[in-house]
Image (cartoon, rainbow, N blue to C red):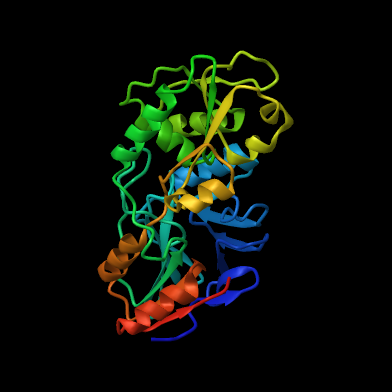
Amino acid sequence: MQDSLIEPTEQGLYCERANVYLDPTEPVENAVVSHAHADHGAKDSDRIHCTPATQTLLKARYGFNAQSHSYQQTFLINDVEFTFHPASHVLGSALISVVADGDHWVYTGDYKRLEDPTTTSLSMPSCDVLVTESTFALPIYKWRHPSSVYEDLVDWVNRAGASTTVFLFAYSLGKAQRVLCELQDFDVKKDIRVHSSVKKMNEAYRSVGVNLPVYDQADLRTKDFHGDVVVAPPGVRESTKVQRLSNMQSSLISGWMRVRGNQRWRSYDNGFPISDHCDWHGLLESIEEANPQRVVTMHGYTEDFAKYLRQEGIEAEAWDV
């Protein structure tokens, strides 16, 4: 097995044989993209390969086109085989298989094992080398079942006063749609509205067949949303219009809320640990499923995770990309 089918570079992971970057950090000539989040989406690259749903989201978010390939559909770039497998991080997200001369690498991008009604469930292939994210690669990160978290969230929302505006801060792509879809099964006493960026992504999700309700947009320039629930990206919290609200409660929906100190540090009224990444046990289960000869950790607690894997007898190293 060759050691350099994929290498870390300043621009991201690079497959020299195909002249392709995986999730590049800056515009490149050829990019293979795992999903449509800004830190992975290869904006302004000359040629982008992704799944059809990611293509739709990239078009909606940034206005550019990409070449799409369905899950399990192998495509060739300079005699190197690439295949997308469902990653369940967000709609269209993919693990990326890279195969040349019998060497099989899998780059995970971001992924999760928990069920999500807005994504295709994770499908982890076996491989020789697994390059895995390590965002929550510490034993403290163990996710509760999502239904119990949503029960707590809805109970907190319903205890807010009738005139209190409740902000649920969640990423506009992925997390917001997952939360909105799940909340359909709960008795939320307040009307739900969405920020314009969430509404835009909701429309993109619906365009590819995801069953999402239609929610009115919360116009922050007016007071028509006062007393409602507003689902918005975290950056909106710092806007002047939100800061000036006199009767408002806020919560962050994120895996980082698993640690109570993060909630206090970020000064939210509440926090709910719902994540679109694997927890500690999910990462270990995925490695066992892939059964690689070698593991590369990146993005997160890379050194800690690689050290643990080596102690367990697994060849592992950390990459700083």
